[in-house]
Image: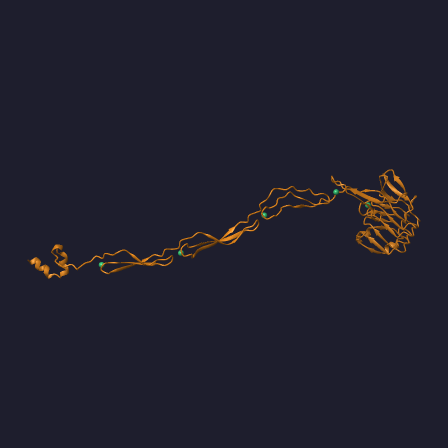
Length: 360
Ligand SMILES: [Zn+2]
Ligand SMILES: [Zn+2]
Ligand SMILES: [Zn+2]
Ligand SMILES: [Zn+2]
Ligand SMILES: [Zn+2]
């Protein structure tokens, strides 16, 4: 009794908990478990928007629930804006996918299509070029676009032989097999030399001597030559001409021009003395000495070219060359001063001297 009394003295929250459940004597509330019917869709979901459904209990209670959006349903891919590829150019199209339900565009991407490249037909034979007409390579034609890869091979041009010559003409033939082209023309002389074929003529009949010890030739006189312009040959009977001999052309007032060939190294004493009509004299590079009175009294000589290699001009060499006004020297002023110039060459030393001359 004491124990139960103490319990009663405690607040109810304490003793109620500690009592065995079966001793609790309370009235439970009136309970009703809802019994819902089937869900009824009241708002259908779409691809992009939620729907709504509800169910109802016999007691009238309603329960409402969202239905998730369905999402799009991809339809078949479709090509748009198609640009066809050609043999040489790439093409493209846009691949578009729309929703099969609502038709809304879901994706669009550009797809490149590689150039197709030519579609070659059969190889056709080429044609070889000739001297005068072009040929072409073997080739194919594109069956799609008609492009041909044929390439032109230029004409070969004639393969000329060396010139053959006579006194008036030069001619040559094509050496290429199958070509019979031939070309002939008269010489085009500049001085004694044809500018095209190189043929040169020389004065004939000049007197000469062969120097037995050196096997060279010295020109000694006009001989039977009637030329007023004398082209002295560089070679006579296979031997090189190296000297214009003493008095070789002395006192010939018919001479107007003399061309001395390369290979001559000395011009002898009185060689052209008294050639009063001699207006032009070509002295080649290689001449080293000009003899005594060699050009004395050449009163038509107004200018002269002196080669760089001259080391000695003897006395009287240009004595009484009254018209000589200009000397073209192929060496420098220092070299000019080194030349041993003999006495009585006032016409030479008092002329205007142009150094380092490079003209003809
Ligand atoms: Zn209910
Ligand atoms: Zn859709
Ligand atoms: Zn093509
Ligand atoms: Zn030819
Ligand atoms: Zn010629």
